[in-house]
Length: 285
Length: 270
Image 1: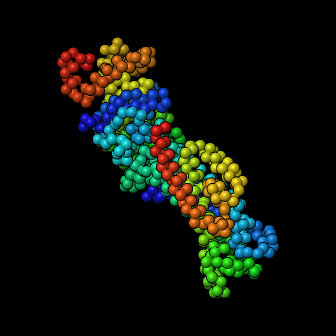
Image 2: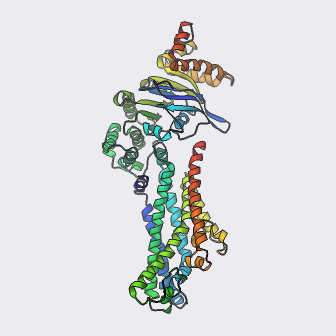
Image 3: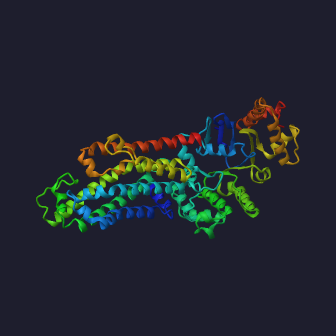
């Protein structure tokens, strides 16, 4: 595993019967970065995140998180990750504060961490209210507080701004953007909206039908769009065109895409090969 | 630690009041029955505890099982309703530890229910059987009522109280142990069903489908949901106490093992 990458997956695959939700996924998430995981609904983002959290067992492939591998180091991995998957998860019969206190006790954190987490997501004044009686946005914030409590070195957030009002979206987006600097953590955040990811992420991974179509920075996405003849002035259009092109491709095409993708991924793990390809006129300029 | 967390999760779920209500309702059965038909029972020969168990336990066992079904479903409903269980799954907690925590709370609450029921029997014996010939029978037949206290020395009130308490504890302990496999199986069913109505339905169907089974076969008597209807004196009479308790303990461990397997397999299909 490359030491600059805190999360790496190798040929990660998840199948349900004859349906493949995630296919041969090779992710490289740099330490201290915000990685935006982008893709339409049903692309396999949540499934990938669930596999990283041990909620579902991969059908194939392996992954390492901070040098630890699943399933051997499952508990050690979970100790390092704060997560928010699909929908906020909490106990409706407990108050917001009691929910966070439960997590605090499991993680062995100081009492002050509950207050800090509540403050971070703006729930302090509603801490004594039963979580079941929270509004959708407040539940979302509680879920985020549960992920952020104790400042975990890795955060996995699945569409964290769902259900929030525009002000809430802006607040959470700013918070996520500031986390690597504030808490020295790495964030993997998923969304199906490119503009949202563009505002938060350092790196982007685009997933469609369980396959990784692109991995790199927004600049690299622009270059990729240009080289593929896709609109590069508007990244959202480029993203949509990329997804549309992938949807229209026949079944044999993924192999070709995988080759190009593998080259990019090799660049991330082996800078020497990237330099070599650049000097020999490879696809990356 | 896990047990403490499980206790905290029970806040405002109504599970402890449900156990208490179930225990009180069940404990009221012999009192109401005796109040309504005391002469029918006090005229019977035999020891009072056996008379009380024979005449009331079927109803009491059914209330115990129904309470168990409701509380098991409520316990896991609070986990599934707002996805709390998913949060636990992404925290460094052993899911089987959570199950064991719930099992311990259930077992403790069941013990409390049985204690209430035994206290109710004691009250009935004191109130309705104290003057009858049968009152001394409980001590007069060593073994038959679960007591090994000899006949001599029974006149001493301290010894008679200790003998009564011991026989009640023995009977209560037996009823508690034979309830455990049902408790574990119900928790296993509840943990497997996200929808409370499914687990509740399975539980209720099991209660009514299995209560009609005859009680004269050891194998049939070992089926969970049917076992709790047996009474200590009846099993003692058949001299099957040891194999029965052994089989119930084995069943309890088997269901705990089944849960640990289920938790492992669940990740492959989720």
